[in-house]
Image (cartoon, rainbow, N blue to C red):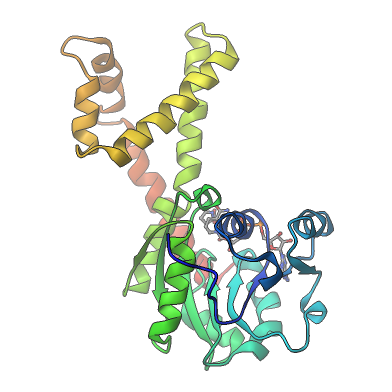
Length: 278
Ligand SMILES: NC(=O)C1=CN([C@@H]2O[C@H](COP(=O)(O)OP(=O)(O)OC[C@H]3O[C@@H](n4cnc5c(N)ncnc54)[C@H](O)[C@@H]3O)[C@@H](O)[C@H]2O)C=CC1
Ligand SMILES: O=C(O)[C@@H]1CCC=N1
């Protein structure tokens, strides 16, 4: 795990909802000192929860210390809140400060329009398993980001999971569809598997336990095994056995693949739309 205690300044979080909170929890669990974290969060109940973690919290930008010099500013409001929220943070735009955005769709160019042309912006797409150190983030740095800023951003993100850097920012819309939203599809799979179990006669609590433990166990096996997903699937599928009957349904021409392809195309399209419109 990389050392994240050596940020050359404080960390400012703008918006600490589900994604900002997942990253924060991951960083705090990995030793980021709460006193070095400043958070702007308008939702009062959330501020109270955050204050209990020992971080510095305020309701808007005017509550930040005047001499604050953040090394990294995490932008984690909804994309629809960017036009209103970001201009207040333009004053931090200096070569030694980078803005790390996790917003779906919002391009580096669009953010620089709100933060000023000299702002160093890194566009990232993480996912909520970051909260338990098992996220995956893909990021694209602004052309003006220094090597040190790329490294700091990468190390922060590596502290909560795997990281890949992409030169082609245009691919981040597909990344958003696949891994940004991916946990939601997996949770839906758990829900569907459990519901189907109930419909097959199982008690609800047992069906949910079976579905949830099976999905996390299969995920862990896929992660740790030297075999690829298709081989692991075949390993479960006995000739003339039970799994084959289910897979014949799921792998039919109108089965899971065309459905998933359509779902990912729809999310990718929406991410592209968010660049311009709300
Ligand atoms: N939820 C997820 O799984 C993922 C979300 N994202 C991105 O993360 C960003 C945040 O999404 P969520 O955490 O899901 O939304 P959220 O609604 O849970 O969090 C947004 C937070 O921003 C706060 N906020 C609103 N206006 C603000 C302002 N002017 N200044 C400071 N804070 C403000 C809200 O009170 C809220 O707590 C979005 O841009 C989304 O695209 C990216 C990857 C995954
Ligand atoms: O649904 C969304 O727009 C965000 C981006 C990826 C996951 N949640």
